[in-house]
Length: 91
Picture 1: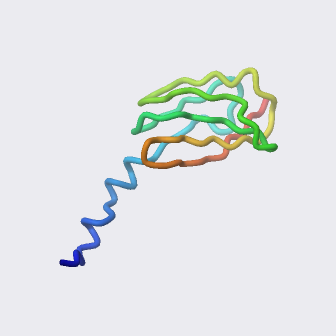
Picture 2: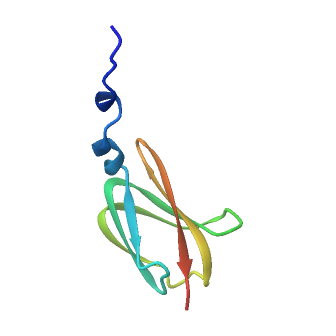
């Protein structure tokens, strides 16, 4: 039997479950990370090296005061996949 109901295959709730927010952006010394999923947050510099890695769940304050000004990639890894955003650090 073939299921032709698209809503059952991929729903908006499923997509929203896998989101996260970071603010402020640009940031100076810390960022607030809000995630609906438990996971590992990794911050990468432009060369692709991991410069910070923290476990997150719900609302989290992440200290970035040891990172230089510039652009970074933030990846949230959960058991169902990965999401990425860009972070700008300005001082």
